[in-house]
Length: 237
Image 1 (tube, rainbow, N blue to C red):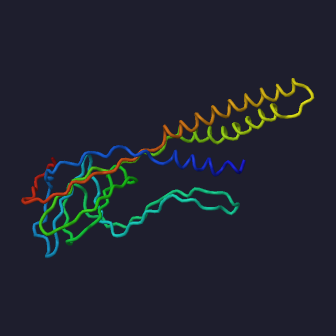
Image 2: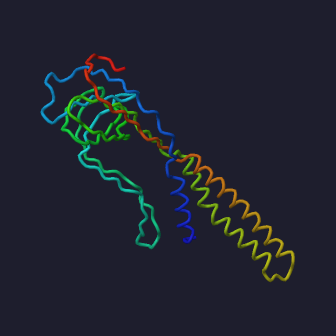
Image 3: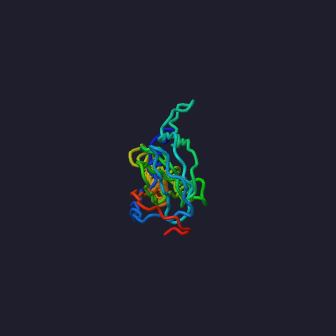
């Protein structure tokens, strides 16, 4: 049974990897209308950035440090292979809630966009800031976690795999084993075939369910463009 853990773990990793959806269309290069702009111009060697997000407002934060830790395998104290989930470490300074504006030093900056309705989701974009005014319109990255049916599928695969292997072994024993009566051999073959059928059905159904109900991921999209006369009305187009 323990020998089945590594292949089942590999199946689980493949089935829990989010399905990548087609990326969204880039937002139109239409200057966002900001409720209020700073009265003073940006300091020297700074640029003004107008932020807007499509669909819903988002908190814009300046990413000061970012580290992405990929999923990995580690060996437990009992010698079994264990999957450690990936994670992200983000240190960020909040700037404003879209639609909004911020003055930043010239250079490349990474920004994190967090929807005001969901603190768990985060979308990022890297923008080159230059002197003057630029607009940044962003479509949020979207992720959907795996559903409860995925866990049922994993349970089916987990129990179906050993039943399948056990059924094959029993059929082989009934076929090639040394039995005094042919009836005993035939009974062993029938038992193995039934076990094999149940195991194969559980394994196949489980893998298909895991694949059908795994999470999804769609990258965000960003449009950056210069703005000559920043609008400052109360609506966002």
